[in-house]
Amino acid sequence: MGNLYSKIFITGASSGIGRQLALDYAREGAELWLLARSELKLAELSREIQTLGGQAHILVCDATDEPSFLTALATAQEESTGFDLVIANAGWGGRMQYPGDKNIEVLNQVIDLNFRAATQTLEYYAKFMVMAKQGHLVGVSSIAGFRGAPGGAAYSATKAALISYLESLRFSVSPFGVFVTDIRPGFVRTPMTAKNVVPMPFLMDVERASQKIRRAISRKRKRFAFPWQMAVLLHLIKAAPDFLYDWVAALTFGKEAVTGRLGKSDSNTPT
Figure 1 (cartoon, rainbow, N blue to C red):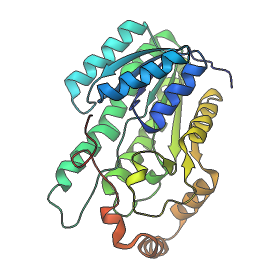
Figure 2: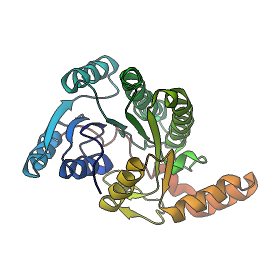
Figure 3: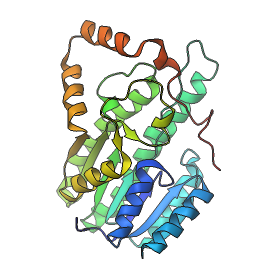
Figure 4: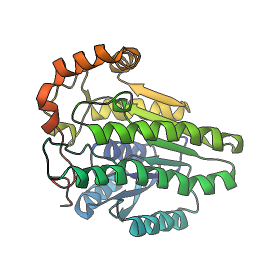
């Protein structure tokens, strides 16, 4: 798979899908700007990229800290003089417990990262791409945005909002030669999904997921949901009557879903 992009910016690059994308794009000769909270993990990733013959610039930043985050975006823009590809990938699931003392805290954290930081990333770089009349903006949403997932109220809501945002953004910037792709993964084997206790049908290895995502980006797909089996299933569920969805969700997930996802306040802290 040939690489069409020479300068790439990725958030949430220290683990999971973001990390694998960084490694794979490095193998294709891209220069990368990688943002995440963990300096240790970013430094390790940078060393791996160097062994592959690539070049990485690390930006240690909590994307939920808005002033620091916007400063980091500006630094990356200045250093790169403009990106060919920007991937807003950072996100987490959050843990919603009922009854729960941390639900509002987790809700705010999930909104801040999954929606606010993602849209700020894309809006910030959209300006420069529109002026340059070229570039590609990518948001990583989720098939969980199709319908409300049991136990994942904050996660599903933010991903649904991101899906709508990406569609609107695409219409707004396409007249200027800027492309927008909405990537909607199903279950991918990452540190975040490793903590799930709910069923994860069609679970995919992160290396395969990266291959599919990069192919969709290179083909300038408007939207790409995968695995295809999960995408078809979710489209059917989305069209299903509410009473049927309620019955299937309760039968499949039950009370396990309430404690099946971990959020920043519990385990997703820098190391």
